[in-house]
Length: 614
Image (tube, rainbow, N blue to C red; front, side, top):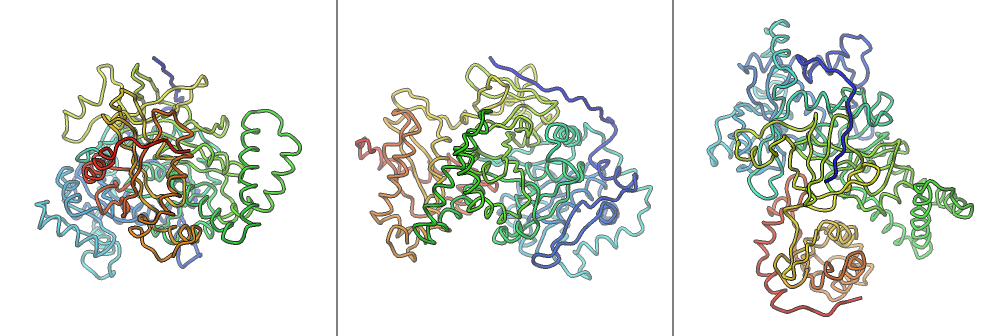
């Protein structure tokens, strides 16, 4: 059994809470810039701590005037935007408990979050979201809601302006009593899990989880969490990862911008010029695939230059990471390709980004090395909703590729005999909301939280995630196979959107693969096919199947023979949140996919074990 821990040498006021992180900035009189709002495309304006505080307190008073009592839940359903941050803090200033709801949620999902949490008030972004809430009340038997809209006319009765006006008579003393009612051990928010294997569970995260873990990150990665830096948030604030970073940025005075529309993300990154990014690996896969495709479309010479640059960059990064001297010829090649290729990629990402904090799933080591050569150190982290996001994070001081770093200060890790990762410490929640059965299943008798993930500790105390315990496939021959690594390799291709490995109690491993509809036209052109073909038609073409087979063959080279995929089927439509196959945080709902495509899986195995390729 392996075990490691990091001490947190900071003290915290037990009577304090998350709102104190903002109050300190008001009381010390420095008034730092906390946010930037995009006033028009490419134009950003500052929002100082005092301006943010004024908006927060005005809305908090409105909530109090509406009758919100200390400890009551208020939901937020919106894309990632500045007003999300305002309402988050306003609810906590009013003594309430914040319940994030994914803005893509269906009426039944909204009903579950509202009903389980007990929320009777909700802030939504638009009339579309208000309509979903109404259907949740009418069709799904959710409780009647008070609804305020972010995008509403100032004179509208359900606008945030109306909520501010309602609070004009609330005294500062009354607000201060509500703001200070909660201590570190009180619940700040109820965040619902992704629900990959069943109904989402509400995680009660305390003020102390956020405050202590924020202090922990300031100690662990001071190069990132400091007032000289800025970041552009585009991941959903309903997810614990972005939400935690939001709180950390206010604590560390990192300037935050928001990009609510993913279709404008490239332009927003270029105009905002962040110092670091909060990402999931899929973003870097798309940046890399887009750059490579663009180079190859520009002609054979530019495509060859990009491929040589990638090869050189990976070799250079590995040489640097080994701690030895970079060979002179390799160093010269790197300088050449830095001018020709890497500098252009840096410019596309705003020109200032030095770091990225990555979570959600493992990052391909090759991509880690490639972006290191571009000039961006991707610090991989690991955590869950139940750990307030990061339990571990890679550090700048001891930067390594291929691990998710050591535990954050104040956190401890233990690897069980079966490989399961156990966690405890300042970020670990205390309870699921109204779910004592889940509590009993999730904690050991001595207080360790069972993550359900499989991992190992390196000699240097770094965590390496090797798979998901519940997703472990056991073939008919008794071979244990963790599908995530193989799936990540296949998904790294611009042709592929999703890959789901199957084979539990079966004679061999197979895969269900979907095509990336966004990049499909370019990929079809490269195969000499009509770029106007849709995914269903493309899936039938032998050229596409042969291209996917080549990907599968290459991926098989990275695993043992028993783990290799011996058959696959291209699914004619992508796995999406709307189809019920992805969670709002873009995780695969494996049981649902296996159920919905049971006939395809049966057909694979009825056909028998094919001959090996490659």
